[in-house]
Amino acid sequence: MSDDSNDNRPENGSRPGNGSDPQRELPPEREPERELPQERPETTGTQGENSGPQLTGRQRLVKAVWPPRVTRAQLIVALLLFVLGLGLAIQVRSTSENSALRGARREDLVRILDELDDRTKRLEDEKRKLDGQRTQLETSSDQAEEARKQTKEKEAQLGVLAGTVAAEGPGIHMTIKDRAGAADSDTLLDAVQELRAAGAEAMQVNGVRVVAGTHFTDSGGGVDVDGHRIDQPYRFEVIGKPADLEPALNIPGGVVQTLKNKQATVDVTRSGKITVDALRQAKRPDYARSSSR
Image (cartoon, rainbow, N blue to C red):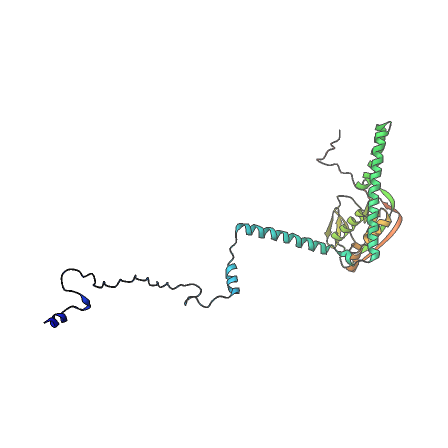
């Protein structure tokens, strides 16, 4: 009997009954649930399946700078740089065009320097003369008489420049013969300007007096000077210092060389006595009046 009762005991030493057995094993504790990694959504960047091959460094650089993203400040800077570059280009071009003296001979350069020195001396002499006239006016006992004397001298000088009186003195003769028509109005005007810059005081062309307001125009194979037609050969009578006038015409790139390059003939001779007797009528200004009282 005792054996059967022992066989009916529950295993693990547990006893039947309604009460709780302190020796009964507790159920195992549940482990905390681990968060599963979330799947990342597929990206559509440069490395996606639909984005194509990966870009190289050069391609990324090109993509970064093009199309350009221009701001207002960048536009202003670009405009200023463009204007600056344009000005420099114009300056370089004008310098290259006016560099005809680069290929000149040493003798020609020396002659040009002498001409510039002579022009400077003439200006200095004129300044000293004007200073002397002012001193005479300030120190003269009869300033009114001295003023009248200087006024008459000035009137004679202005008459020569205005062409209202005849003039005589040393100078040059220049004759231009041109069958090809190279000696047009612009060429004759350039000759007049070079002679004036060299110190010409009075001149005439084919019997027409040349003054400050003289203009040259082309007219049917010839040239009109202040409305008077002149034909070849063109003869210039110029009063001034011959040692200054002749070199001024023969400088490299000057009128004589330009005409000779165009198959024209230019003859320049010095003379101790040149007569400029072509006169012009004194024209009274319509609106200008003297402001002196």
